[in-house]
Image 1 (cartoon, helix red, strand yellow):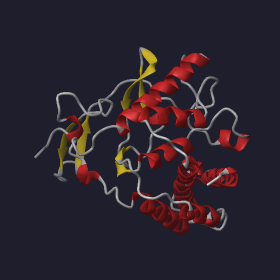
Image 2: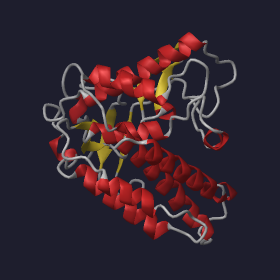
Image 3: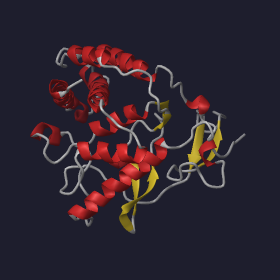
Image 4: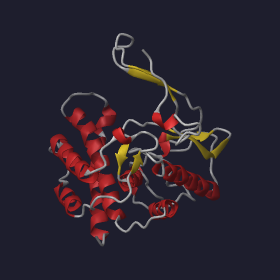
Length: 281
């Protein structure tokens, strides 16, 4: 039997209109061998490492797009998850500690002989861990340019947000730190530019500091410990890259692209240590 709809779409006005509408879901594994759902298709432009052929942004247009990206992000974090019926979608109590502990264990399990020693970074994250957040929200956990859909008729407008597999309920600043980890700005060193996956280096794109300030303004909050969240975001991204590389290292895949992941792991460790060195926390 198929079930339709989702709590975030139950009201006449969706709580978050950028989420593709789930059309049907079934746990009947006889159809394709596993439970599955069908969702709305949102047609538009998705930005990757470089702009698609024929698309360009002036510095002001790039700035406008960044503003829109923050608008949508803040709108998600302002969703009343209890009113939306999403209380069972996550456990906000102890969320930060579970994330730091969990990703630390994942790195240790996936570490290879040629991988960097992240122990100092993990120790710093444990020592600087904030207390329970006063704000709890729906968090996407993978918010970046290639997970948003731009209007094909006006690419400065966002019409959809994709890839909700890691969404949960927790500290929104953990979500922000994860987004910052992907945000390679124009002034970043060559090694960071080499692992960039979005066109955040373009003239007019915000710096990470500007992104944080814009987000804080929209959320009506002060953020004085962003170093912790950004460092965690870099660490988590390094763990993901290391887990991919681990498969190549142990012959579980022959995909040569995975071989390059170890470079990203080292670059991200260097970046995380740089955050720690410059931090006042």
